[in-house]
Amino acid sequence: MQLTTNQNFTLLIFFTLFIAACSAAKVIEPKECVHSGVYYDLNGDTISNQEYCINLINNGYGSSYIIKDSVYYSKLIPNFGESGRIKDRRLLQSKLEQKLKRKLSDDQPLVILFYPGLDPCNDHINRDPNKLSRPDKLFRRDIRRKLKIDPIFVANSRAKKIYPDQISDPDRIIENLFFKEHYPCSSFVVIAPDGSFESKFGEYSIDYLFKSTMNLMANNKDNM
Image: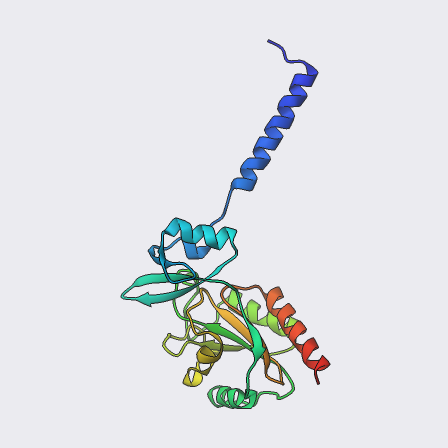
């Protein structure tokens, strides 16, 4: 049986729409979905892995971890970061300077990249505390080029350091001020000279870090 031109055209449209629908339906699960463990919703009630992943993908929630006896306890969180103002940036800066053994500028923002410890999102990272890998060097170079600032790499005080230029959180001040839960991969916080800050919980891009820093500094100038 031969198809007419109109029938061929109809079939072409059908298959085009079918392929497009299949492509749209293909969902790449976030890294937080691929590990086994115990899952909780926003209220702390236990939910299934499927419910947890649906909320991460469709509802835009973030997640935090607690690791106990090699079991991952994962909880949904409603937002991906915070903004506000700390009372004493000078105290925070002083503690960082003691750990870094160098002076930090009072007029520049503190750009802190916080490593929470090992989790399924960051377990692929080359963990050599004595040597930077090529991707790590490029990452630092790109940050310095964009921000004109040396970032401060801080590790959770209970975690093993994974970079030679990383310091342990002094007196857990970064954790207590900004990252009270274990957010996957790593997080950042930018703190302006006046103490105003913006943080991001979990995985981020350099562009996101750059935009957050620029926005924060612009607002800081407006309020001076």
